[in-house]
Image 1 (cartoon, helix red, strand yellow):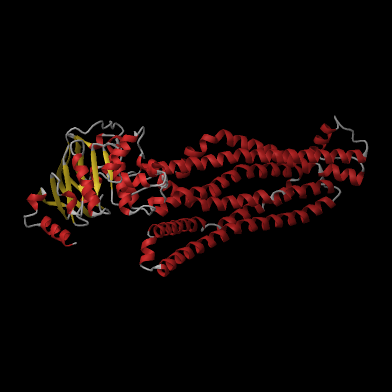
Image 2: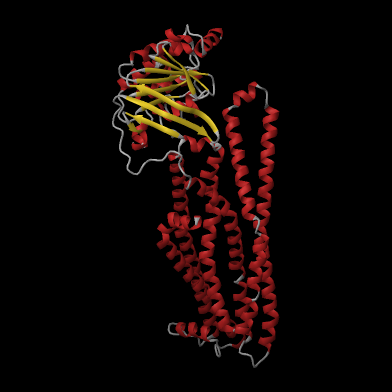
Length: 597
């Protein structure tokens, strides 16, 4: 089914061009056939000095040429035939090039479309879908596997489209020349394909293993580069290097098997082709030496030359078969991404979420990862214009609450309501536009600071940017940078400090002017002075924003309207800081730990 999907989604739009490729190949093979049919008249002129008793096909070509040229003189006839053969070869080469030229368009556009579809699918998948996969493996599928499909599946399609034409036309002509001799030749073709098929049968499994190992290798490289400071700080060069070489050896070992299996197809087919030619030489030679046999020596030479031309298409078909088996594993992995079920699905009748009027509420909400309960039977309300905080130890369910609120996940049970309506009734894009989000893991791109700040926003005024920078307490720093807002950030913004990256991320969230701000450990990399300045600014924004703040540093949320304390996926306390600080319980314990740090 997936191969039908591949054809329907990616190849079918180019069906007209594929027909053109087919026609150009027919013309190319036809010109090649005519070249070989000139061998008989050429040898007759050389050795007999005349063109008498030609085979019907050669006679047909010569009769048509004789309308324009005279074959009375032997030297003149040889010159005419040589020029005609050169013209035929020119036509053969031209038609072959044109078929490849058209096919190049098909191949490049099919892969470009496939890669674009994969990227769009990755962007549409929920956080839950992607959290279960390694980033390097996803990159491998989007880049390496699609390239493998081009090198294998599409190459195989081209070979399966063109080479059978060559075989069929040549076999028709060969049978026309001599049925007994052609039956002898034909016996070797199925034997060749069966043996080659057996030799390359493990290719699909090995290719899939190779892709998995490449994904692991890319993931490890990506993790190592991202954690280079940790590797250097822990002096873990040896361990990391050994791990990389182990993964590299495993991948190389599998690739070596694949290369050997693919490379086996070509020499096997070539060997059987040579065997067929040798048998034809023996059998046909006996027939040609018999004066009573219609297979004359000049015609037998033509036959041998044409039989030799069966070897390349048989060889290419064998390689195409091996490539197709190899490419199926890459296609399987691409198909897994394209047909992945989205954990968060948009209703076909979803409507835009145009505003946030009163509250977002959780009604008996539970969520689990597999068999593990993360939060259970939560009832919670985030009123408009309020500053709500979630605190608790790691793993208590705080970040999951934020993910559910922004609909990065859907609850396992229960409902989340926006102004009394289930959030599943709204389109994902419009619902997400209600939130400005800042996480502890800041994502900045290799681009200008301006483009990072305005990501996803259009028509931003300079005044709005400056206001957002001031709120995030980074205005002075930005304007001291070379180029200011046009300063170019490196990958992930690693040419800035952790606190600077977080404040840029905060400015980006504020700039969106979304009614709800969600801050997940947003101030974790700030110093005390910057944190106090930032929280004062956020407190001034309470009249225009609703804020949900997740924090380990309790100084961040002292001014919160309500603090919810979480433990093991449930609320165990709630109230203001002044109310909770004197109560025996989880909050007081967390407060004591914070003060000791």
